[in-house]
Image (tube, each protein chain N blue to C red):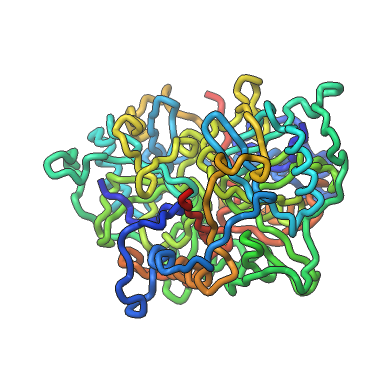
Length: 304
Length: 304
């Protein structure tokens, strides 16, 4: 078999073999950069900002983005603490677009599950102020959708000096809060995740609330729905959600232990460059460019 | 349920209800543009350039790109005519990257299936000449990977006046010929399709041979492989290919009958603009931009 000598698993282990004997001798690959990283290049997500979505197929780990959508994140925490999502379903799988979950009967009069003590209405949080305290590691690559792109608190993001706004970008794995026609019609009770080519036209049009860190492969393979917009047409096609919990509410022994590469370090800059211009022998033409949605955000397990 | 009022099924039927009563009154949506299209806006793919990949789950329809990879396309036609792929398997499914098929034993000494009368070695066809006869409908949007982008004979493409080259761009659904370390090590016997964020760094580094027109949802949902690069670790995880045939070699009564929107018309230009700036009520902020890999390429069934 000719194994297309491209790509790299993103879940790296600290024990991966092979290393650069002399890092200065040639441009480093992503693997080499990760192997040379130090403890301070990595971070452990805050359990208060981490969701576990438990499916029959396994656990999906989501990091919330309170710096961009504080009201939505607070509402999601409330919904989760009251077990709102438990027993609800994944209702939509639209090829090259999104997988979406929530209350399949949410719009049936008298059938919707109560939001409990969560807010029934929230302001739109499509953007946030581009203020001094905004974490933003810019990448200089041009982008057609935004004046500047980069990474903010570990997530792909954009900003505009002109409008003084910053926002999360709809890349693969980003999670957002579904809304109807009104901009303030999302509550966080209906969530979607991007499973295809980045639908950046959603940026600044809907509230992004976080990102899937682990388990995308459990969501991206769900059979596509055959109804309009990829909704499942029959109730039995929907995928049950066993439960969603805040990591902080799960006993430590049951938590998924992993670290994420920080996005505000020189190691991260080097990683971006290693992917902007792939200097291994396979690539003949260097791209000289990377899209904000092509930058890998490595995760590594840590021993218990 | 709050159905995220976004997206649109790409397989439209000629009988879809709802239309713009007065097309001049406001910018048209994609649906309205398609409903107002005329017969000359559509084309029927050449059966000599169309593959049917038959899986247990259904048929995948692929259009070949002889204008970009004539030698590879000729070799694939030869392989298919001699039933090379029949009984081989899909061996790789890497999340957010590619699904790949071919001979799982192709690199085991003495185990590889014979290529028959197909060429065992081909030149790389990463780019073609940017000549007078190049069909190219440019879209003016900026692109970080190429000086100019657009559509060429119905497929997403790029070109450079400086190098006088044109090439197909690695968007969702594009099909390419896997290769090893040597640029001329692909034969068309090992094929992959993009199932995630466009890996444009592959452009000009590997030979793209076509595009999936129908059936992406059969490939994109295959369970991800857990081996390196997403290869399946066990033989029983591989997905059997019943057969691959050239449409021209299939009885007319068994062919999939459909049309594709042409990409060299004013209707197509209007469609691109309708997606560059979504003017329906849901969108509050117009993007003012579209990525070449975000442009839908509509398919519609035609009655037998």
